[in-house]
Image (cartoon, rainbow, N blue to C red; front, top):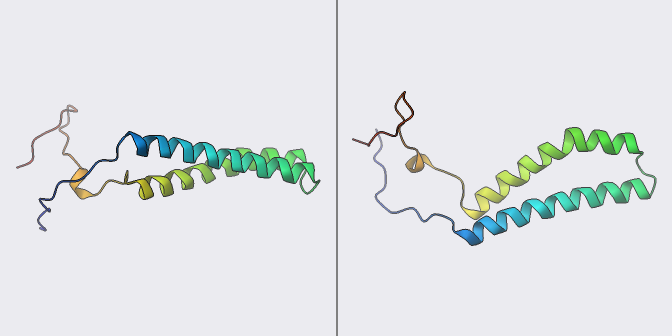
Length: 94
């Protein structure tokens, strides 16, 4: 079994929280703006925009959230995991 490093892990702070929220809002605004532009130019009709929002937007936002969390340091590694007992309480590492 591999030993875990003893170096402390620096947790993202409130600035990273705000950057994550801003990034998700910006990605949503970009998607809505692009859909509005395509609709306004007649490239797509309203049905296609609706289908894109229902099926594509959630997937796009999940990908954006994954990328932002990795970039801002929210991605957990094996050292962040804590054992949990069956009753839901955290147990101490041995």
